[in-house]
Length: 381
Image (tube, rainbow, N blue to C red; front, side, top):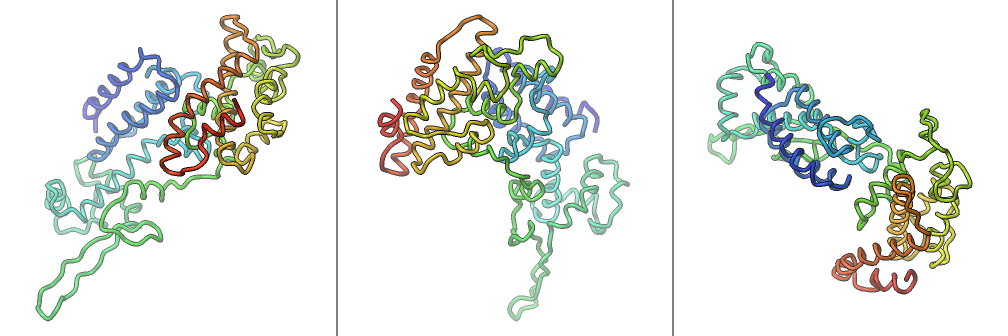
């Protein structure tokens, strides 16, 4: 396959990226567009063609650049490498799929159609002109002039583990013979007469070890832009001053919020007197004392108390606090605007109060009882 064969796909994706560039989207918004729009377009193409590696590399480069920079030109300066981004959220990533692997799953589907979809025009042509009287598993795929067919044949060792044949038999007393038919079998699951893209993907790419901060970041009802900052912080990818100094940048090392110690993640989000005033304001409302270290504090948020509503609200408050503290820190660098901790506390209250309204409505429909808003007014107002 030559570039001109897949250039229309690249042009279409580039046009999408460029149309979003001027909209000043948040990181969470860009991630959602990659998931919902870009990958749906790629999926349409991959369900019909096998995309070459050069095409896949170019698309992933554009996706990475757009995610981190807002433009599809260069991903230089990305806070997390693309390999890590393309892992499940449980494993510390963002659940973006590696296109080479995703393309391979759709290629397996094409192989499955050769056996199962007798009514397809493409299948009929393949059976007549490329397979003929030969066995698909044994024929010489390299002899074909079709690039796609040669690459499909290379996947036969992988496909063979999934395709099983049910041998036909004589039915009733008539000499009427039932044709052999094929089933798709994934691991120990029961064979199926249909292909499942999602199940095949999960079988080939099982999630890795679960990170201990997953439940504190990706809980249901989170605020997306807050969760993204909490994710970066949990991965230790926010550019705190201690990291910049280690990289050789000539920047002051002192914390911008308390001006008492060198800025580190532990100091900025747990030890700093400014931060303590914000975070302890909320935990004190429910008479809880979280651990004093970053890692232990994030683990504590998975189950800080028995009350599910308080647990949910504390997670929202933690992420909102991290987001607001990081924004305040950056504001002091770039615009020399200083706000007292009380202003952040009020800002966080306004954000969470507005967010809890729609969540409370959903909660009432699924689980009547004390609502999130009732808990909020009882403990946190």
